[in-house]
Image (cartoon, rainbow, N blue to C red; front, side, top):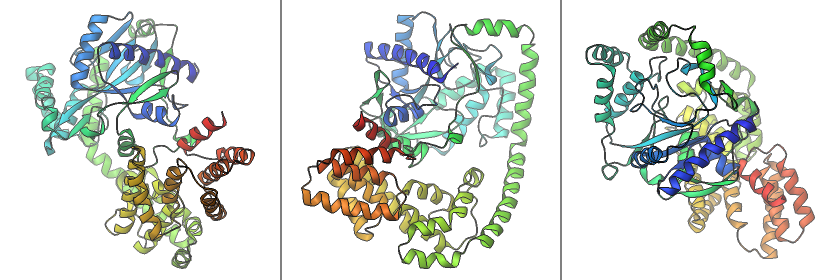
Length: 512
């Protein structure tokens, strides 16, 4: 089955939800990859195979009422409070005439067709114990595998004893009364009920929906969606990931045959109770050894860290970095430190924040060079690993770039430009800041003299830095100068090997 077929089925389902929401004045927002798709592609992320949306609990309750009233054919709405065997906090709006069976849900416990995932936004207090309670709740819901490495094995074992005495539903209801009872007016944050990850978002980031094109419909996103995406995915959320980082789901799918046909075909060969007990034992075992398991993994990576550090110190000429930086040869700094950057940002070191024992001054030069060559989001990722305690100046630069971008997204161009001009006054070759300035400048009318000034500056930077975005800004200037053919050639060149999804979208719109 092609990804396009999968996406068309998902699109059909979100249109149904959208129609119900419009009819009953229910607010929802595109979330996660769907929100990125709307902003970065005006449709699906090319490899994405599902749709995610969020609703506040109040709006979800209204949606349940509307769904029960509308009774759409061959559709089910499933969630833990409705289906006692349902193993996750995510709500699913499912087409029962199709098949989409996940490995973890093969025991015929819920509808397994194509669906839209609905995440509920619950207002939460500033309570340190809330996260622990929520993770405990998710572990009880799912008997098949450990949900989160931070979950308490002691509490899980205690809850299992309570379940034997009082029953699973009673224990779950006790958690629900503690977790989902808060009023928005008394809270500053929502819990986004993902389950596997624990994400919180400021309530003010949602607000009145903004609408973006999504394939052949308009889809709502949160009012400060860029802020939410930055919190969830990092500063580079708009960057197209490498092919090896483009994730899809491993599922059994069929658009022509309903999931019941598949399940009825194999379930008769499975002893459900016995399998359920086996899964439960495996989960219990994994919960109990989780800390030991994680310690072994961490110790293994610590040994790898020592090995990698020795190789780095052997192969990299760190003594030359300060000279290169002070001569403003930022690209050469990055090229020299490339092995360090790649290794330090490897996923396993990133996860546990393991840091190489490198001179902090060298790390500072590295971070600033990444920012000054236009890839501030890569500096942000590196800073999260090495820590910002000894890199206060770098932290301030990044904070100001984020602030300027947020004002830009909110169309507050004057404030954004003031912040950027201060950064450029500190270092005129801060390409990350310069690109935000160009995003704003291009929107205004420019005199011929101003265009020529920016043209000279951009051409100077293009010679020094390998940043495809600069070609796009140069094309914009040529367009303002009335040199359409030259601009078109540059736009086409800017498309080559460019991973900035927002720039790619804008260029394609211009060329089309």
